[in-house]
Image (cartoon, rainbow, N blue to C red):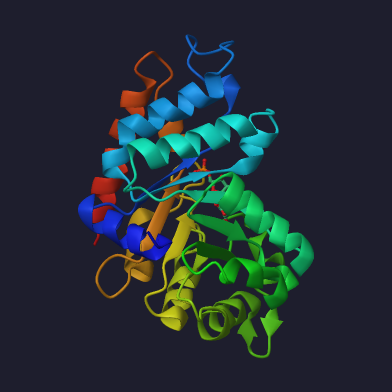
Length: 270
Ligand SMILES: O=C(O)c1cc(=O)[nH]c(=O)n1[C@@H]1O[C@H](COP(=O)(O)O)[C@@H](O)[C@H]1O
């Protein structure tokens, strides 16, 4: 199914705008998993199986797997999600972006090797670096716009003909890059007013919103500024606050409880 269709279906069927970020850090794993040869897969799989009915998407972050030489675990994890929880789309957080000939290989990595439904991209290299991704009309292309980190403003807030660069990025992508209707933007929860300015420019385009939980973003402000006309339009992503909500044998149930709490807090503001 087209990423945008499965996202909308998951928003509706699970009544949830929560995206769980899958960022494995073995030092934070519960004691009974530490040292097990397949701990990265087992940890993420158990989190997924405990939360799949209360989320709208999963977002594995590729460096967290690659640094551990666990890319095969990432492949198996995405295959597991597709097999056991086919209603939940998978966003590969890879923040790619390169000249067209290399971008083809990043396309193949994300969609043919890992079989993700969507991927995050850095738009700094311009249209031709994104085009091979945009051409995959059934896949989501989620472009950095106003990132959650403290240095996000270093370049993104620079004046660009009377408006900040991040708004020019939002405007250009919504107007020129979205011919296949498969674009979305990253707008951090830590800058809710900027998020609202992006929403005003892009209409109902989905926004991936990291920065809730460990980075301290304000859920109510994100909803107030960022929800679309029908009260959806957001993939509100949290990694550490859900993954490491508990560190005992019941860690997956603790993650489920944290995901449900976040879903309910969000829904109270919709
Ligand atoms: O593209 C992202 O997902 C992303 C964009 C951004 O602006 N800020 C941001 O934190 N992220 C990612 O979102 C996740 C945030 O993790 P937590 O702070 O633990 O919820 C990490 O995987 C980051 O790489």
